[in-house]
Image (cartoon, rainbow over all chains, first blue to last red):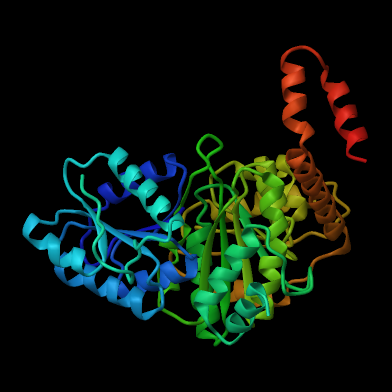
Amino acid sequence: MRIVVAKPGLDGHDRGAKVIARALRDGGHEVIYTGLRRTPQEIVRIVTDEDAAAVGLSTLSGAHNVLIPKVCDGLREAGLGDVVVFAGGIIPEQDRSPLYEKGVRAIFGPGSTTKSILEFLEMVSSRKKAAESVGVGEQIGWRWNE
Amino acid sequence: MNETTSLFESAKSGDRRALARLLSVLEEGGTSPVENGSGDSIGITGPPGVGKSTLIGKLIDEWVSRGETVAVLAIDPSSPQTGGALLGDRMRMVNADSSDGIYVRSLATRNHPGGLMDCLTPMVDVLCACGWDHVVLETVGAGQSEIRVVAFANRIILVDGPDRGDVIQAEKAGIMELADLIVINKADLPNANRAAEAVKSALSAGSNIDVPDVLLVSAHSSMGVSELVDSITELQSSKDRERLRIRERLISAWDSALLTSNLFDESIRAIETGNMTLNQAVGHIRDKSN
């Protein structure tokens, strides 16, 4: 799968994003890493140009409630409703359900293993093949439970 | 109208998503809607860490400020073990994600050295046909298969840095003979002049091929970037270098034919078990594929 790993907003720490990028590569995926401090518009542009099937958003700054929905809306507006959005970093439990309602399909926090992220992506592939909803613009409902 | 043609029509009218999808179709071996080889590209290569991506970022800025558009195909190797790839070139092209005049696409070599090349030419053709003024191929010049990638470009720029000792490596690997222009990046650092002189003397020694220009550039401070863009505009390849490139392309096509042959795995097993020698295997594959 072609996957964009992105760092939205002003947070300057990308150790986690880089670990994820490597783990996905080792899992056989083609990973496009954006580098730090991307705006939601830039991330949508990158996903478009790279024809990526999924985008992972890493945020540690606390701005996830603003930034992640903006990326989701932007993808839908750009006609990329089939792209799968997942998130990671520091996202407190009480903030998660609004993000799931925006179309995020998985949120990985501290303690998540890279193995579970790869399993999530396998599940994504099989749902895509079966034409079951998994994209950011498709029917909300299914999400990954660790 | 089939899928490729309709994507192409949309891409020509400026639909980036259609363009991205079309490039994926070509990457997976789809038929190109454009005449093969009609495009024109600039290949940029050089050892790891000399600042190719950063330099391309600066070239992009300069072209865009002149009102021209740029598409970049940034090529990185896939892991031979897992098939995965980490594509990080665009993080150094910081303005690439905001302007409509820039398109950047990361490509993984996908473990078949010839395989990617099969789709590179159609990709360049399509980008040119969609009206992108400049199409740049970026690849790490660290091994033979990467040199062969860059040999698919119409004009080639080799980037090196001061104090690297890579010039001699590049010479050994045969990239220098292919280059139409040589850039010494990081010219803000000491010893850049000396590196440029070393390259010039290496080039002029005992070669009949006309010698490419050597430019000093600093992507960090933007020094020399505007002059580099001017040189690229006027850059022409010579007949001798064109012949060398055709040679590399032919070897690449040959590799591709070998790697995709159904006798390839069979021959490896036969050699492993001692049922065949290397020479017998070569003969076997060559005879059977005629």
